Image (cartoon, rainbow over the protein chains, first blue to last red):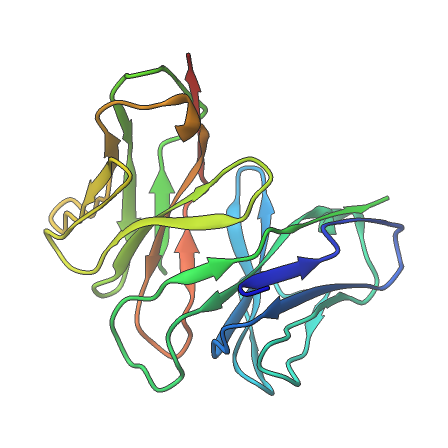
Length: 118
Length: 113
């Protein structure tokens, strides 16, 4: 299916376990993003990627690892989950390419993954 | 740094009421401004956007005007429907090395029949 998908949609894990959230987009967008959504905080950027093999930290990167070996995939790994990482995680991709220097940007969001860390 | 401030919710209205959700921003430069909507259980969808001062974005009966003098981008709709119940996020984007959106905290809207 075309678009941006996330898996799993729901995940329950325990403190200290490693968890990987998957994100896949079919548009070949250069930019991809991971956000977490928490009540009262809106969406906060965890990591982003400008292209395959290029990633950078966002506002709240601690405790997370990302990789981007292929343009269409951008997995997010919690190396040792903590209760404070209980959240809803959204992946997004951006319609503008790396060479663009201005103009408007439209980000397209996946449906989210609700993660609970016990 | 850049930031977006939205009116706190939740907001509860009756069907056909007038809606305003306030949004102000702080940015170093001239951002593009967006409203995103999140329906229950779904991801965010772009509702409307404006790229420069005095631009008006509109979609599905919603409107917002980019006001540089007041650094605001208030969302309005003349007659809300039950189906408009959702969380609304104001966001800004500044050109640069990273295509990051800065979001407000979101405003929950509930429309009662």
